[in-house]
Structure formats: structure tokens, C-alpha cells
View 1 (cartoon, rainbow, N blue to C red):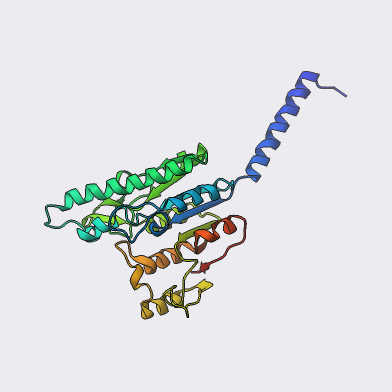
View 2 (view 1 turned 90 degrees about the vertical axis):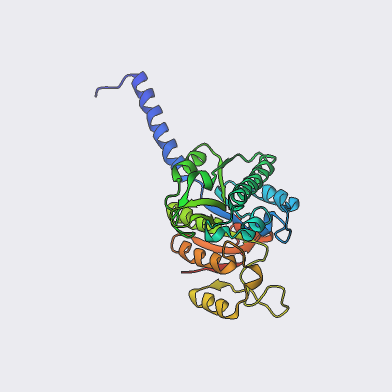
Amino acid sequence: MHKLPKNLLFSKALYLLDRVAIVIRRGMKREMIILKFGGSVITDKKKDIPTINQENLKRIGNILSKHSHQFIIVHGAGSFGHPIAKKFDLANGLNNNPKQKKAIEETRKQVLELNKILCNSLSKKNIKTKTIIPSKTMKTNGPKNIEKIPTEIFDEGLETGKIPVTFGDVTEDNLQGVCILSGDVIMEGLVKHYKPRMSIFVMDFPGVFDRYPTDKNSHIIPEVTLQTLKILKEKNTTKITTDVTGGLIGKIECAMEMAKHSETWITNLDHLDDFLNGKPRGSRVVS
């Protein structure tokens, strides 16, 4: 029998080992989780001026630094942007108010500043991020219809080991000039594209309640369905939390679309570490 030269055998062995390594790396591909941090989590949303929640920013960095999942982060604006957007009615597009242009610029400036603060906080835990600015990369056809999500930019971040971070912003709109593009709507688009293992809304309450959470008779709803949404609308339990991006009702509507593509939950920061350890706690949204 003809024997192969030793150098050829060695080369073939290296090739086989390389192929095995590729298969192993593919098998070890990290699970993707898309996170939405509400503005009420990373800021003091009750303030009329931009106010950071420093403690929660530190907690987010501490939690994420312990886990090796592939993350995409979306965040809300809270006290960065909401007060100005509401005052100048930016959610309803351009009008005849000459001060609107300056309000748009200031809102964009504030939400970008919040993004920088969050990313800088994460960098202190050696978490590398890549910011995607919606007002520069996305356009809308109405507040709930993104013309195109620039997934190639998100992919660039993921491929280089960075966490893509984006946020609610004032974007150009083909129908009304400008609109408030909420982080919830962006998250819905990302989930439909990437179909992550899990999608988590991190809020200031540990889930969805049958009445306002501070009511002593309130109870958490473990599974949120279309029927749940109808009941909540009738009860108007979300009145206090309604903002220029649609509040909790709008969040649940986005979450129901997301649930068709990903396991989707609403929870709070206290339970995030449990989620990332495979022990979800909160309200699961089902379509």
C-alpha cells in the first residue's frame, strides 16, 4: 500500500484540526439577547431637566460584565429629551412653531449625550460598545414604521466583539417631517431581523400589573396576551406612565409583535441577572 509522505500527513492533520475547530466555534456561538433599558431605569424620568440614575448605570455594567451573551442594547430617553419633545409636540411632526427646529436639535443633542454617558459607564467594566444614532441612520413613514434598519452597522459592531447601542430619537419622517422614533419600535425591528434567543424590556417595575403597581391590591401578570392588553386599555392602568413614545400600552403592542420571533419579557433591573442566568422573572408576552 502506498504511504503518504509525513509532511503531507501532517498538513492533512492540521487541516482536519482546523475544520474541527471551526465546527466547535460554530457550535459555541453565543446566544443573542436584545435588551431595552427604559428611560425610567437609566434616568430620573420625573425630572424636567436631564438627570442620570448613576446607581442603575453602575448596576447595568456590573451585570452585563458577568455574562458572555451576544447583546444588542436599546435605551429610552427619560428626562433626556422627553420634556422638550412633549413641550414642542414633536411626536406629531413639524408645525408652524418657529422654535421647533431648535427643539429638535436640542432633543437629539440630549439623547446622544445620554447614550455617551451609558456607553462610558459600560466602558468602565471593559465592555466595548458601538453607537448607532437613529437620526443619522434611520428614516420613518410614521412613528411606528421604520423605512430601513441599518442592520449592516449593527453587524459591524457584533463582528468586532462590540455591543451595538441605539436609542429613541427624533428622526426624519416621510409623512410628517419628523417623528419621535421610540426605542420600543427600534427594538421590534431588530428582533424581527435577528430573531434573538430572548428579548427583554427592563423597566422600573418587575413586570406588567393588573392595576397601577403601587396599588397595594395590584398583582403581576405572569403572561401577557392580546386579551390582557384589551383589559389594560379598558382599565387605563397605564395613564400615569404614558409619554411621547406611547407608554406601556405601546410597549406591549411592540412586544406582542416581537414575541412571534423571540421569547419576550418585561421585567426590572433587579431581575436582569436572573434572566441572564436562565431564571426569568417578570411578565412574559405571548402573541
